[in-house]
Image (tube, rainbow over all chains, first blue to last red; front, side):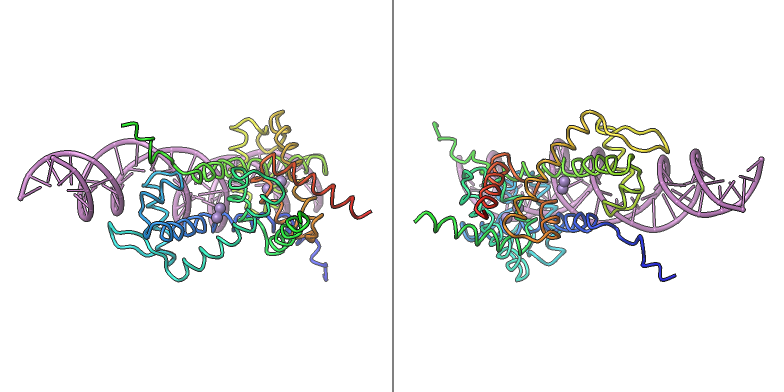
Length: 148
Length: 148
DNA sequence: AAAAAACTTTAGCCATGGCAAAACCTGAAG
DNA sequence: CTTCAGGTTTTGCCATGGCTAAAGTTTTTT
Ligand SMILES: [Mn+2]
Ligand SMILES: [Mn+2]
Ligand SMILES: [Mn+2]
Ligand SMILES: [Mn+2]
C-alpha cells in the first residue's frame, strides 16, 4: 500500500490536449459572436446571409450553428428576423475581440504582413493563455517603443 | 454593367476561417503521428493503450483515429500488434515536431513557464504560418543572445 | 396586388471525434 | 496446458459542423 499512486500520471501531455479539445469547443462560438457583434456595429444588424458569407460557409451551416448559440444563451432571434447577442454573448464577443487584437497586434509588431497576421491570429487567439497574452502585449509595446 | 463586381468580396475573413477549418482537419493527425513517433523512440514501440493514455482519450477513440490515419496512409499496423508510421507518417511527424519546437522555444524565450508553454504550443503550432514561425525563430535567437 | 428576388428554415446526408460496453485475442502465470 | 489479466477491436450511441436541396417568408420590383 501507500503505493505513491505510482502510475496515476495520465501524463502532462494529456492535460494539454484536453485543454485544446476544450478550446475547440468554444472556438466556433467565439468567432461567431465576435462577427455578429462586428456586423451589428458596422451595419446596424446581423443577418444570417452576412454571417455565412463572412464565415465562408453555407447559410444552412450558419443557421445550424446559430441555433446552437441560441440554445446556449449567447444569441437571440425571432424567425426570419435578424440576430442579436445576449448579455453573455456580448461579453464573450468583447473578450474574444480583445484577445484577437492582442495576438494580431503582436504578429504585426514582429513584422508579419497584414494578411498573414489576420489568418494566423484567427487561429492562434484561441490557444494563447492569459500568461502568453500578457507577454505578447509587453513585447508588442517594447518593440514599438524601441522604434522611437 | 461593369459593376466592379461590387459585392463579390466573400470577405478576406472568410479565407482565414477556411484556413483554420483546414488546419483543424490535419491537426489531430499531426499530434497523433508525432506522439507515435515519440513513443517508438522512447520505448521501442507504440501501443494503442499508450497512445490513448498520452492523448487523454479512451482507447476506443484512439483506435478509431488510428484507423483513419491508416486509411490515409500515415500509419501501419496488424491486428493486435503495435503501431508503425509510414514514410509519409514519419515525414509528417518530423515536420510537426519541428514546428512544435519552434513555438515552444519561443514561448519559453519570452518567459512563459514550462507547463503553460507546453499547453499553448500544443494548440498554437497548428495555426502559425511559415512566416510567423520564421519570425519566432529569429526573435528567440535574438532574445537568447541579448542575455549574454 | 402579383410576381420575382432574396433570405431563412428545415430536412437529410456525411465525416470526425468523443464515450461506454461487449466481444475478442495474446501472453504470462499458474 | 489452462487460466486470466491486459490489450485490442467492434458496436452503438451522441454532438458538432460541413454540404445540397427543398420549402417557406419577407421584401422588392413591376
Ligand atoms: Mn476572433
Ligand atoms: Mn478565431
Ligand atoms: Mn505537436
Ligand atoms: Mn498540437
